[in-house]
Picture 1 (cartoon, helix red, strand yellow):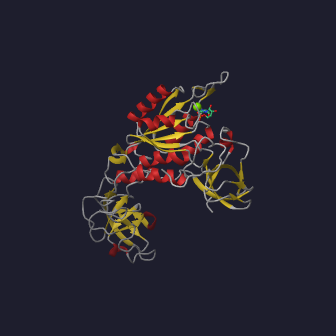
Picture 2 (cartoon, rainbow, N blue to C red):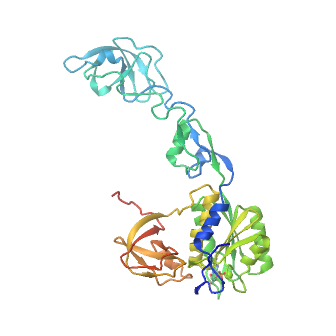
Picture 3 (cartoon, rainbow, N blue to C red):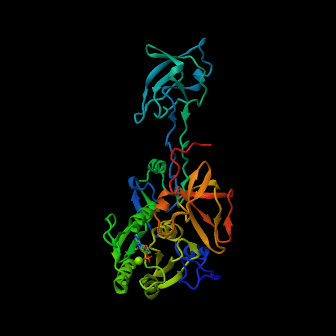
Length: 424
Ligand code: AMP
Ligand code: MG
């Protein structure tokens, strides 16, 4: 358990005797959650997956010397002194095309009509580009000096045999798949995608996208969490909404822990009469943290059932998002072999207004961005999801900072990467 807990009053953590420092929870996640096993995937399915093993080139790419131009394969000695005043006339003895090499040998005074990518014929050591030639019946006149080696792509110039091309942990990009294909890999070893069970709790909840009926409201958290989990490389499965009944919820959480690599529980994570999740995790496994010095997500928790990490997320939608960003997302990314840090793009901005924060508490503050200034959105508490939909991103006030002043430079994590950003 964490060392020095926050003892001061927190309006959203008042049922907790103490709140764990965010850093302690993160450190516990990092110490206990690591990449899952490896599985092979076909190259066509590998984009965005995490490469599990270093890839070394077994052979040279390209595997032969090749022409880099459309023109004529020649012996450089024949044409190194050629020019408009002294053209070199060569006899054209054949053609070389990609996949259809010339099988003969280019001798002195000879040339082979060649196109880009075709293997350089034996005997040739340079390519004269077609623009530097004048065709004549059976002959080609070279009018540009072309030394040995000109316009020849050497075997292994792209990737030399033995080179490390991609390192383990790489999130595979489209061009990486191309390189792997060139290396002759039809399948690649990748880290297994974490199966994440999302247990949604709340008697008041209707299925997502359902109009509210009386005091019953649509579940907002499952769809939000599914999208976040998918973004972080996980495979989400939603359980529920599950009633706020201890036995029912216990069964649901136990079953989820048997069939998933991680369990997230939304709602019922605090200290009230209907908050069964912490006790259930403590019963079925270990509740490592309950109550975190993080606004607006103090009723968050972390535990494990067997080897399966369980993250307790407050039901309030903004709290749920915040606790996912800090804890659950990290668990998902680490299980999947990804970098622990946020998937958000950071930018710098000047704070438009001061932000008050308690020492020892981390604050997750939604902001609007305009003209390089970050405007905190103060009109939204933990239950106001629209504060997060309006926001361009969020900033974090660290635990050791009592607050920020107007004009302070801050780092803003953008919910969306800037589209069409200009390079500056
Ligand atoms: P809880 O954390 O279960 O005490 O819930 C705190 C608040 O968040 C209550 O107003 C709940 O109605 C609301 N809430 C809990 N879960 C969800 C959910 N999945 N979708 C929308 N609101 C929720
Ligand atoms: Mg609830």
